[in-house]
Amino acid sequence: MQADIRLLTPEDLSLLREFWIQHWGADFMIVHGDTIRYDEVEGFVFGEWKGLLTFQVRGEGCEVTSLDSLEEGKGIGTALMNEVIREAKKHGCRRLFLSTTNDNLNALRFYQKFGFELCALRRGAIAETRKLKPSIPLIGMNGIPLRDELELEMNLP
Image (tube, helix red, strand yellow):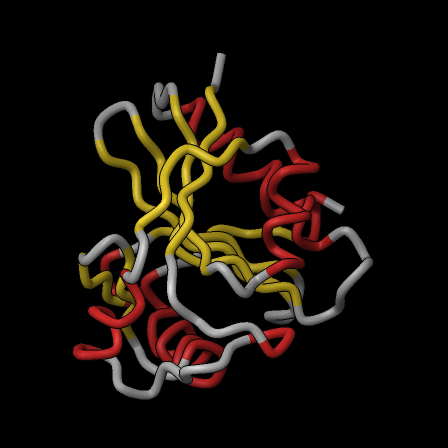
């Protein structure tokens, strides 16, 4: 499956921008109060954009900024996570981390099964994020009020 994964290239920026707009509602993310733009990340594409993982390396940490698998249950997310772990280790990172929202039960299950541990709760963070990105709904996935940001991390050997 690794053969189906490639690094994002500068030529992919317009496709990445469109992908984020279609799947995330804007060409930027707001995570832990920071705005992350599509042209500020590195990433991996699976196949013909059936999966996408973006990340930023900062010092000894690598933050996953987005993960999308358009075909659930086929190992795309797992393959992309394994690839970013290899990349983070290559950069000398000691920590891989990411944030998700309190309503995203599938993501919480996936990340914890993958070996991530909860490390931070930013209570009420989504209300602040909505000020910058008003398209974020009040009710999220699974009918759960969308309120909090959860951070998960994995220590890298």
